[in-house]
Image (cartoon, rainbow, N blue to C red; front, side):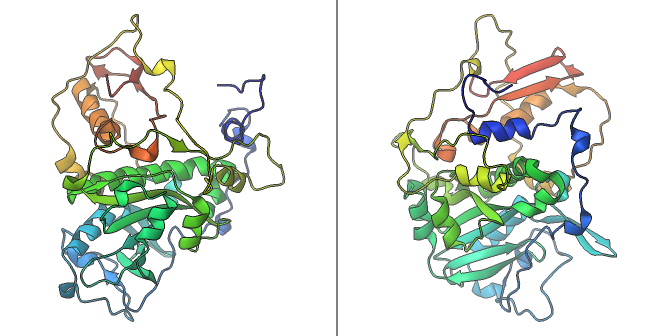
Length: 398
């Protein structure tokens, strides 16, 4: 969709238009400089990490503790640490390791554009037997929690989220952040799109992995950016917090009926920005929310999100088999390889995947991301048994 020439676009609209791939210009992009490629993980190290490997549902993990590490005795820790271990592993853990002359290449539970893995996970933990309250970094390489700072940080995270009720009585909060350079060295200004996409994959896994452990993940996009960045000691030029995820006991999640539908908004900045400024930092900074941000109701969904009388509608089967039990095995086997057979697909299989992918985003006891859904899903179908080839719009609530 082209920009409306009758008004000045926002920076987000300008950025989206400027970073579109177009056949006539895509060849003009600079080639990736592989000398500038950073490691796809942070090199955390602690003498006494929390080793999460013993809790995995298989006997061996290739990369255990370093020789100079003395992990805490797992017998002294709460069984809840096992739930955290499995949740992190099936969210973004190392499910494949390729040995090479240059070291280890790690493939993870969540897909990533170019296998660059820009998303990091930090946990705020409290009230867990055997662990000091504090902030912990998830070390993918060794499947460990590395202590960053001691002290109960959950109230500070909750305060940055304007004390959202999902924080009441919880023990675990996950904070997902994006490291800009991990994607930027290859995808340039379009990297911000890739980072959000990759973080969405990680978040989707986290929602399902938490459910496996009897937890309800509540993703929150409404938070005071500077407060959260300061709490995590994040350099905004290098990294940005993207989503906060309190983990509630599934049986303890209350109704969302009492929550307001209002959201806090960032200021609308006009484009184009200063052409000498960093595009990603400008866009991310513009989308940040400040403490006294105005509160307003989000706009109604676009008209095209409803079914019109003249539309052709194909109802999908309602009583579908649940994929939840298959989630751990699917994640471990998943690889981002395009091995298409060209064989036909059954409509029921398409329905199962769409239902599973959208189940947690539908209206229910948890209001996700503090706003109405802005996502529209179109499905391009070819060789699907029971469905005419073409482009279809998926309406999960219809």
